[in-house]
Amino acid sequence: MGRFVAARALYTVLVMWGAATVVFFALRITPGDPANFVVDPTQSAAVKARIRHELGLDRPLLTQYWHFLRKILTFDFGQSFINHESINRIILSAAPNTAMLAGAAGLLMLGLGIPIGVLAAVRHGGVFDRLVGVAGPLAMGIPSFVLALLLVKLFALRLGWLPAAGTGGLKYLVLPAVVLVIEPLVVTIRLMRASVIEQLSRDYVRTLRAKGMPEWRVIWQHVLRNSLGPIVSLTAVQFRSLIGYTLIVEVIFRWPGLGEALVNGVLTRDYPVAQAVALILTVAVILSGFLADVGLAFTDPRVRRRPVS
Image (tube, rainbow, N blue to C red; front, side, top):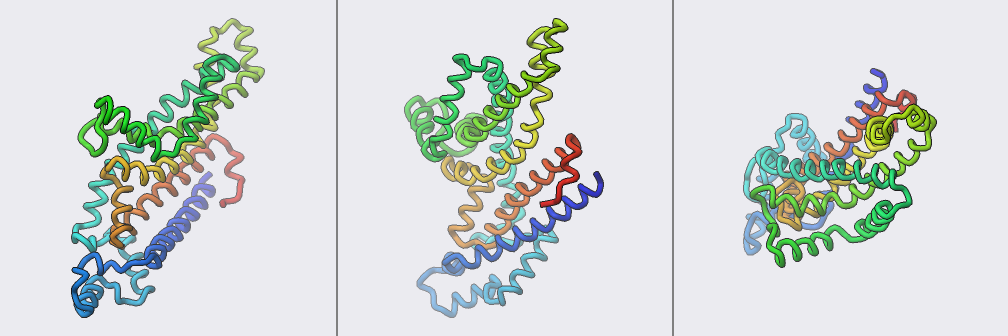
């Protein structure tokens, strides 16, 4: 087990380095000069050249890359090109909001997906199962930004029950969390339903029923426990989706998280902000995969014998 964790950890570090390299060079090849967002467009070329020198943009690209890697290793991401605010402060201010949004969506995904999937499996072929089967594809077929606009128009503008955007309390969290969780929730319900149906056909279920064990205990105590393996593996994948979709949801609902900070950094060519935030989000996704692999290896010894890839 120790060898597997060490190999997976080394692989994760290499992937992080590769991700950091891609983030750095991807921003450098995008059109636009950060100096144009710092100085007045009417300023002379000499002023712009001075600003580029102060920002370190006139250095060779490999020198900038090496400086970027050193900043990462010391956890000092520097300052914003635009407002000269510490990037560490920007991240510490935005990260809790993103964590709150992703956490709320994750709780909804598991808190609703698991019981709904179990009930759909138990009532396999019934009315509830059919409703779930119809509602799932319909919900996944609606793009996130369209669903967000529909929910804002209904619950914020027409009914006035919830705020349309911003932060300030649990009410502000409801709409973005619902939009963020729809697709992962449907996938969780489907996988949970399929896993429970498979377990219900096992011999141990027939044995427990033959012994006279109450049906609710058979389902919720034994079948559910044995059906959670695929959900554990899926959770890491779903977490990656949640991180990705926060970019869209935070912009739509003006939620001041890492996604909004990343979009603003890219639009204004604020390289330090965009690089730091993109790297933080990428590392979160990579670490979730690493933790999922290690967790799965503890429960399934066969995973430890697979090649690292």
